[in-house]
Image (spheres, rainbow, N blue to C red):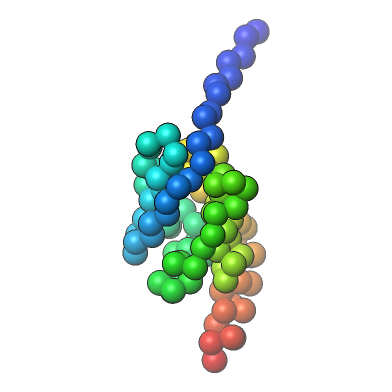
Length: 102
């Protein structure tokens, strides 16, 4: 039995742009990748200000949103892996946000 593996070139993120419906990242190797923010429920439910408050982590191998407690790696972006957050966890987070905004 043979198996195949592929090598993903994890180029660092150099720029991040977030719109109402997509997350776009520029990579140091010249690629630009765009993914729907619906893949990341915390980004989807965030305010514009919260979406704009991010920083690069791991020498550009990921993005962190401190106000949302959300991290997205370049590996997940390149391989098309959406958020793995469970529905109960997301519900708790949304309930907590609603209570804080009262």
